[in-house]
Length: 151
Image 1 (cartoon, helix red, strand yellow):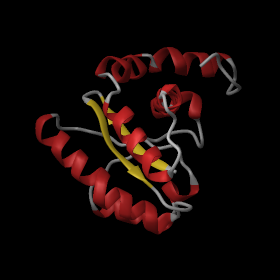
Image 2: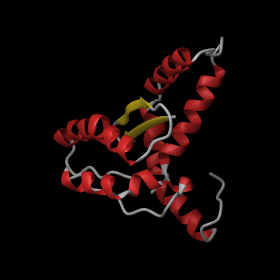
Image 3: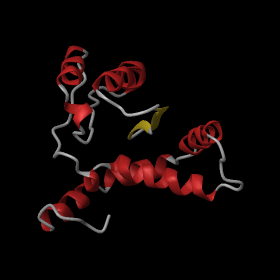
Image 4: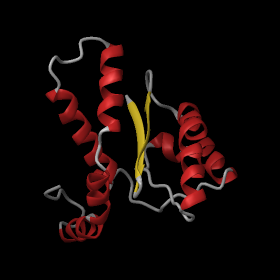
């Protein structure tokens, strides 16, 4: 499992997660990776807001308390809406890029290295394209009454 984030200014850290991510592990990720990334961005681009997909570890009491205590504003968002979350498309892109590699990774360390390398190659133009496409995606989801869309 991996955790990553992105913004208008590109991809943030990619974190390899061992095992299942529960609220304690998620708070560790937020503290160790998201918070420093947001601090860095906020220095140059104030007003950042965080979006996640409302997975149980994202909305758990400890997670919510930690985010609030550290001033990380969270965008209100429908529960588990991958059609509306740009990061889902980045996961798909990352998967396709790793699968194109010759030779394919054959061990966890090789896979981890390939994931990090391909994540670092994600073009800023792709991230911005996904973000600017959000109004269209929201309209498509509304039109589909919450059902699947072409994305």
